[in-house]
Length: 330
Image 1 (cartoon, rainbow, N blue to C red):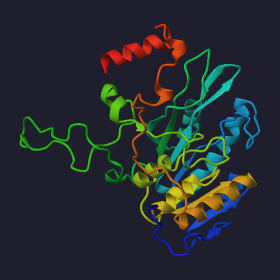
Image 2: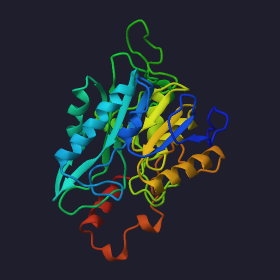
Image 3: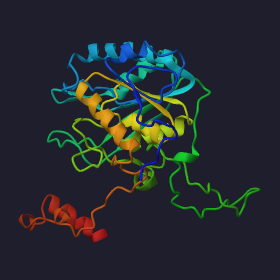
Image 4: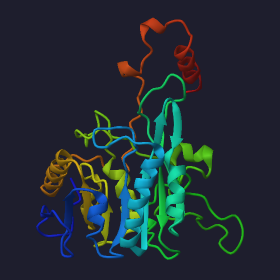
């Protein structure tokens, strides 16, 4: 069952900003919408901007022009960000003629020159994506989390994950013999800490939205509600404004109202605005399919036909040999 928002008139969606609104969905350009918002009113800006790949919802331009456009929009967003607020900017790669441009590297100076402070570069790992033949297949994207100041909202307890060794105890000092962890779990990793252990249970291992995902819509680059949900729980409090300037089909807005926050977004494409409205209404009525936060990623048992070695691969070469090696250690 969905966690229902803490508001009355749950599906009431305002097309323009109103200070008393619960949900705002603006059909138009992000920069135009930001100009209508009060200064320092938004606690969290969370989004996945266009990657300049030439998708149906964007115009492909040079990487220089793309970054110039994004810099102008980000500067406008800085004005509306609360002094204790944060920005979570989820990006992947721009690829041109086979060369990879990691967008988080290009975005970092755009935020830094405004005085924003990087708190984490979070790796979002997933198992499905485009296959390539001349480089390794990409299976992660990043979230740049910036705070506006040194004093920022951060709620760790709601996003803790189960500890791998909850029975560990202090072995010396005044707490010798007492449990060394936290009964609510441990701090999720940003991947770069404790590589060996974190590969197993510390990743933000949240599936991307592909054809068999319960949240899939017509949007080609939709991000999952639970990815945004974790950011919202950690970086805002109930009643705060959460803003997605590239709202797409409304995943960030749904995550916001699901957790008792107020959500607003802007989106240029009319079809996506309509889809977002339908999804928000379906969520409010309890009819929207959502992948639960923290649900384990499916691991094949080996009994499924798709996870078994094809008869054509009887000779232990290539992937067949890799599968034999895996079976040997299981």
